[in-house]
Each structure stands twice: as C-alpha cells, then as structure tokens.
Length: 280
Image (tube, rainbow, N blue to C red; front, top):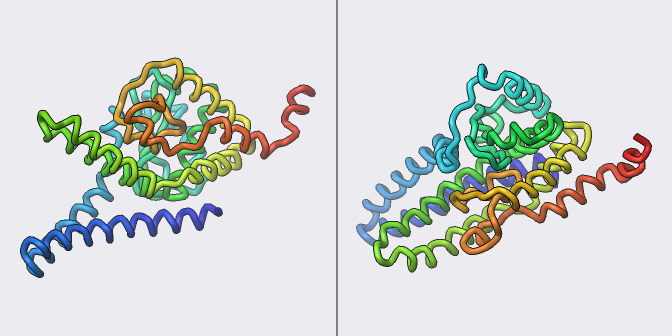
C-alpha cells in the first residue's frame, strides 16, 4: 500500500471513529429521552471528539511521562529532526524527552502539520547518530502517513477504558478483565501491523539506506528484553518497537509485527549488503 492510500485510510478511520462514537451516544440519548436528548448527546459527542483531536497528543505524552525538550538542551538533536522533517515534507514536530533509561521513541499528534516526537534519554545515550536518525525518520513517516491521528486517539480511548476499571472498588479486577479485552479489541480493529512495515520502508528511503533502522531495531529489541520497564500497555502502538513483555494484559495490546520480520524486510531492500560488508 502506498503512503497516500494509507494516509487516506487513516483519515477515513478517524472519521469513522467520530461517526460511531456519535451514533452510540445518539442511541443512548434516544433511549433515555427521545429526540431532544439525542441531539444533546450528539452535540456533546462532537465536542468530545474535537477535544480529543486537539489534545490527545498531550494526553499521550502525559501517559509516558514526557517533558518538553528545549532547543538549548539538545541543539544537535533539534537540528537532526528539523532536517529529516524537511526531507519528509512535514512540519517539524515539537520535541519531548522521556526521562527513562530504556531506549524508545514515539510520535503523537494530528498529522503532518501538528505533531510531537518524544525520545527517551536512554535512546539519546545508546543509539549511534545513524540509528537515531533512522528511528526519527521512522516516526516522521508515521506523521506523514497520518498514522499518528489514529494511533494517538485509539491509545487515549483505550487508556480511558482501562482507567474506568478503577471505579469498581472491590470489583476493580473483574472490571479490568472485562474492559481490558474490549479496549484491546478496539485497538486491533483500528490499527494494522502493515503501518510499521510502510514506516520502515519510508524511513529507509529518507536515510538512503535500510541498515541504520535495521540496526536500531536490533538495539531497541535487545534493550526491551534487558531493561525493566513499566507503563500503561495501551501505549504500545505509539512506540517504534514494543517495549513491553508479551505476557498478561500487555500481550493483548501488541500491534507491532515481529522485529525479526521487520529487519528481514529492511535487509531485503539491499540484498547485497553482506558482500558490501565483507568488502569494507
């Protein structure tokens, strides 16, 4: 699937999400109070959708504990992101830092004209310059393809569903067993694993080579197995690779394809890479 078709599909998914939400609220309003309450519920649904569209990126960044990264704190990284954003044809995203040792990165927002990119201090410390550029290019590909519109909204809604289990008191665990699979099913319904393959391919084009991203995926995947990590499993779709152990509740929210398959596809873009490596 081309980037243009994927972007169109993501926009249609966002609109479908809005229509379904408003229809559900309309049905509730009709059952409770007829046409008058139906109109009020639909209007409230539209307001909530608008609020989600404009603020979901800040909510997602709050879920991962990110703070804004000033230009003076990392001028080189700002310059790298600005250059890659120009190549990708998107507005430079706002940059955030996740104060965490686990190498990871994510993008959130509304698309090419309004997005945010967050990287962890572990990624800035551990990745080589080429690997860091490749990870940034991968996230910018999600921005250009408007994956972030759907990903961010879905993550916020899924996190909200899980948080609803807290109102259960003594029945919290039972509610979690009920709401967790519902939230996970919603995530899988809205997000396709193919978005990662396409973002990998676009990142390879932006970086003029698939190998820096392949090397970065190896590093990120190895770090996820070695470094202890805790967080909301609903944020899994936002990251470059899945940082969670695939067990328990976290296993329900896995939307990334296997890292080995992603690396294989990236290496296949340059089938003579082994011979080039030997020659070097």
